[in-house]
Length: 195
Image 1 (spheres, rainbow, N blue to C red):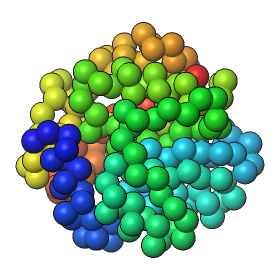
Image 2: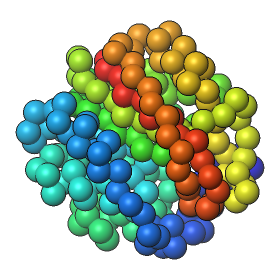
Image 3: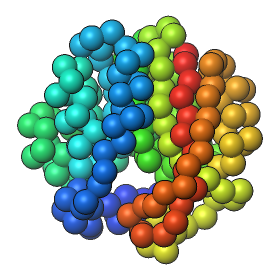
Image 4: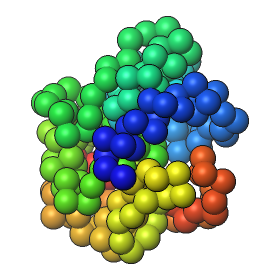
């Protein structure tokens, strides 16, 4: 399944996916928000159903939500009551604009060969010293899940090297066992870093 087919999965299952039972990652959200000034401008990459954007908006932050799926973007707009930009990560062109980037369980769909460029684009979009939070399903080789969605499945070492070579600093990784939409046990990688 190509990345376009991954987007097609989200387009075709947007309402079900957006309305699923999902526990907000409040500890990770709060950690990012605590590192930012009040009212900071946050770019959310891959907002899905919009729950994380809604949480950040409730806390008084200025959120720019984006998603690669036009149908998921519509679902998020219903929840948060503001426009969601339909955009692939590879099309991010903003420069020195955002105080932080939130990319929970989204960059994991970027083909491995394109991930360094996407990290460069995110780096360029952030203001000096601004943080990025991202999460990935851990693994050793790219592949597909049981629903046919593409994942880059990086190891902690691979991800650290990718970020280090891209000029990111203060890279911190943690791992935890959890699950996902497919109901399968998942080893998650969480990364925070700064421009």
